[in-house]
Amino acid sequence: MLLLLTACAGGPPIATATGYQYTAGAANIHSYRIEFAGMPEFLKPMLRDEISRVLAQKGLRYTEGDADAILLMTFINDPLPSATLQSGSEDNNGSMTSEVFAARFNARIKIEMTTRIAQERIWSGTLSRVHYVTEGDYMHEAPARDAMRRAFGELFAAYPAGRTEYMTRP
Image (cartoon, rainbow, N blue to C red; front, side):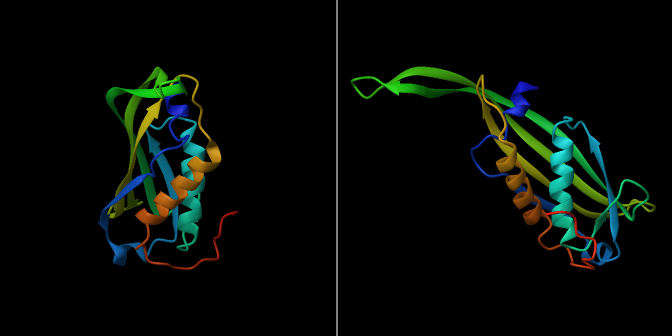
């Protein structure tokens, strides 16, 4: 869990890929609920909040009850070989005085929106980011949320805008 908590502390932006878009079907969706698979508990509220902000701008309303669509977010952790990072201060020769071993993993979130009744796929894509985590790192929540919001904005950029009276809090 410590590794996951440190994951969004800094580094490269989140990569996005939109896998499927059915804009005609998306135009008929006005509400959605979110389901998670394999998702660490601490990520659920952040992901829910940030995707809800993006989708509210498209006119979609988040609900925990009956909805037009189900948005499934599946967490996939792909371990990568550990890395050695230079750390510490420079000695008189300009060399780094210590090395730190970092765990590495690619955290991916597979996203699929389907209609609730017919289970017809409306939208799908992935978010992913390679994380380097060292002992003592921790997650900076505000930058992580900002990165998630930008990534969701990219993923749903072509989603057709509808009614916007269902805005979530900023």
